[in-house]
Image (cartoon, rainbow, N blue to C red; front, side):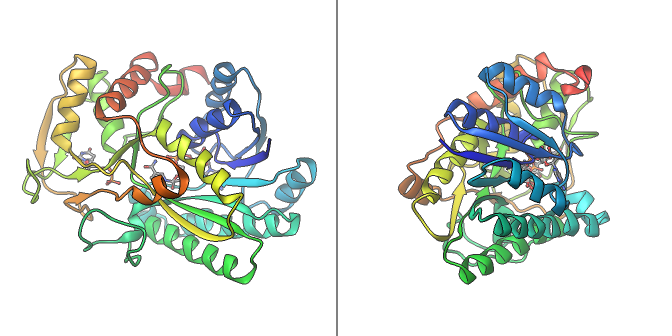
Length: 341
Ligand code: NAD
Ligand code: UDP
């Protein structure tokens, strides 16, 4: 049994991963400044698991806090979710993004090094591949040029971690490149709770279905895809959480940096998602075709073979289950966690 520090553990992917680790018998310490999360997510994780993770409310940029945390808890690995993730906001506030995502990770790694903790799983993104590659995207491709500060912050951290591992063989680092995380725990108790108007497709669709928003804007129907709308590799957050557990275990036996795509290997168009959501919810999702969104690519999906080969991990949940679980979460929590704060 391992004690794992999970930064950003109160957030969307973090809370599902905390639950998976508790259920697997690990001790968990969550560090989160709650800038984009509610304490309620962890209360619900406690109810679901019957176990209580240690919770530290604080910032990954706070070195003194990190030193204290590593002193007080026998942490042997870190899963690092904490960071800012809105593409649009990153264009308006690049310094906040570089400070949280890049400088924050740097401080975390310095504290880990000082504490002798050298196993790290990092939340990266398929955005680091940039544009112009043929699909599917595999880990052997060179990274490209992300089109916004958020994407560049992820790439910078990948490079920083590569340099760190090259400097000291005791480090063992997993870079998990997520495709499009969606869905929720099947209980409907924890899920994605974006603040303000959602940028991402699924939370927007779910809020239309539940009556919080009038209609979806579909950004472009003239792409070179089967129905003209954008194609993405949507992956269920429960599969993603399981992938973190597998990566954590695999890193125990490996040194250096390892990159794994976490996707299903299958693409779905915006209209396919809308139709699947309508089936799962029994509600209409009105939409209007609008111009393409700047920076969007036509299609993006993963080659997920490496994670299967090296981690023994494979996404098991299909689109219908992703939609059904998103809907259950949305229906049970029409205002997200905020009703409970
Ligand atoms: P999220 O916003 O729900 O979770 C991030 C958590 O980190 C939040 O709980 C927030 O309060 C916390 N946090 C932010 N800055 C912090 C700081 N400086 N110190 C301490 N805590 C801080 O986001 P998520 O969707 O769960 O994403 C988790 C990670 O995965 C992020 O790094 C994100 O960039 C990455 N990622 C997400 C997606 C996606 O579509 N959701 C895709 C690819 C990669
Ligand atoms: N999309 C859309 N309307 C929205 C949000 C997204 O049509 O309100 C489309 C977007 O153009 C892309 C897909 O849905 O083709 C997934 O977008 P999202 O922002 O969820 O993820 P991305 O792949 O851009 O990170």
